[in-house]
Amino acid sequence: MVISIIHSARFAAKPLLGRSIMSASASLQPKFDKLFGKVDELKSQFIDILGSAVEIPAVSGDESLRPMVVKKAHFLVEQLQRLGFSDIQLKHLGTQPPPVEDPNLQLPPVVLSRYGSDPKKKTLLVYGHYDVQPAKLSDGWETEPFKLHVDEKKQLMRARGATDDTGPLLAWLNVVQAHREAEVELPVNLITCFEGMEESGSLGLEELIAEEAGKYFKDVDAVCISDNYWLGTKKPVLTYGLRGVNYYKTTVEGPAADLHSGIFGGTVAEPLIDLVQVLSSLVDSKGNILIDGVAEMVAPLTEKEEKLYDNIDFSLDDLNEATGSKTSLYQKPKDILMHRWRYPSLSLHGVEGAFSGAGAKTVIPAKVNGKFSIRTVPDMDSKKLDKLVIDHCDKVFKKLGSPNKCTTELIHDGAYWITDPHSPSFTAAAKATKLVYGVDPDFTREGGSIPITVSFQQCLNTSVILLPVGRGDDGAHSTNEKLDISNYMNGMKTMAAYLHYYAESG
Ligand SMILES: C[C@H](N)C(=O)N[C@@H](Cc1c[nH]cn1)C(=O)O
Ligand SMILES: [Zn+2]
Ligand SMILES: [Zn+2]
Image (cartoon, rainbow, N blue to C red; front, side):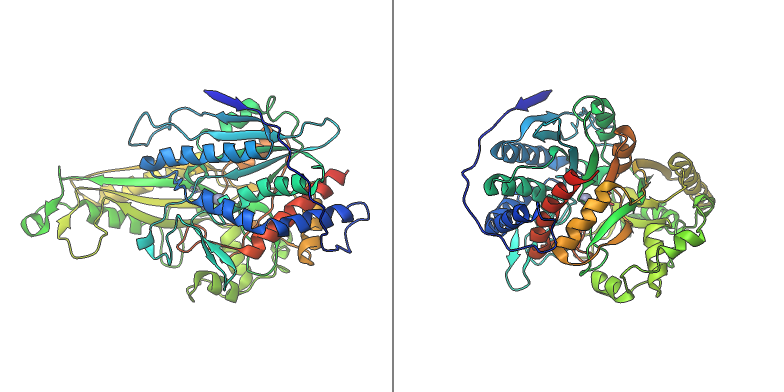
């Protein structure tokens, strides 16, 4: 089902003086003055709107919370209506493919909308995701993860989704609000594409993009994604590459139900003991992937590529600061960056079905699912990788001679992406960054994944840029995720300036 809602209210204008931007081109300077002043003026409203959004626990990976993901989509529709976006549509993507507990589980809708449709203007598509990673206070959060905590002393906002990706997504809407209230015309036609499944592999979105390439998205000139982070805490970056991710589940099952370890320990084959053997055969403590054939798929490092790492503003201290530890596997910044950006990594994420609570429960779990993922890089072939991983797990389990049953399957995959950072869109973003932060941004790749980036680039035949809002120490996916208030505010100013510079570009 597709719903469409049209709304066209305008806000009252208020005269306002912004701070003077000496380096803006002459015709843009008055606009930036007005816009930046308006962003500053609306600061508390922008914080409040983030507060309302993060209260909805839109965890796409938790089937029981799917209604909350849908609720957040409706929340966004309300905001888009309020701001005068048109042609607002909730695109439904059908049922979630297996592996899934509920075979009728519906994928969350993709929220599409437009702001302006002037054929004389360029059309920019902004993508963001409204789903979030799971979070519980008991994981070690200082405050409730689904309640925005504004730390006045540290000038930051803490909540799940603050930086990944609710804050940056709302920043785009706030930029439109600032234009409306400052009475500055939006220089481009804007299309929004907000999904609710990014943290779970963007299931169904690629098909939608292909379907809408000649329809809703037909006039798109460029795509901008704000869903990643600066490398460190001080210097802004623009990002031209991402790793991909293949996420797997290994299930070991045996006894019909959980057992008492005093009664059955030593007499039955324990699924968790088998699973630990299989998982430990995948990777060693130095981060080396132990699956035959994986290293051979990685593109060799060229001299030209190696040079790109020379002038990046990044140190071992930045990594230590972000992790709150001294646990780096590498000491040289170049090695750290290469292992984050251009080499694959295998991470073990957790075991479903295993005892994990407080106390000392003496149970033998009957069925356990080990979760792990591999970050992929050029030139790895996703399907070939699946085969190598599954064959490896089968082989290791077989060697155990266990009567239990072991299966390994792919839960979702997303491709790596790399582009040439010399498009007009990158140039506009670099100018906007310099204007707002007073420094030229570093051009970086990113170790995380945004599965849909490649689909936008290929299906719409456009340039894609990653324009991050948050910092490297924001704790995305971790406890105490935060977004610094200055990054939220300056992020909006950078986005606003980017729109104007991009509109002016050739
Ligand atoms: C970089 C982006 N903000 C992000 O966090 N992406 C996720 C995507 C994902 C894929 N499977 C689960 N999540 C990531 O890189 O982990
Ligand atoms: Zn994420
Ligand atoms: Zn994200």
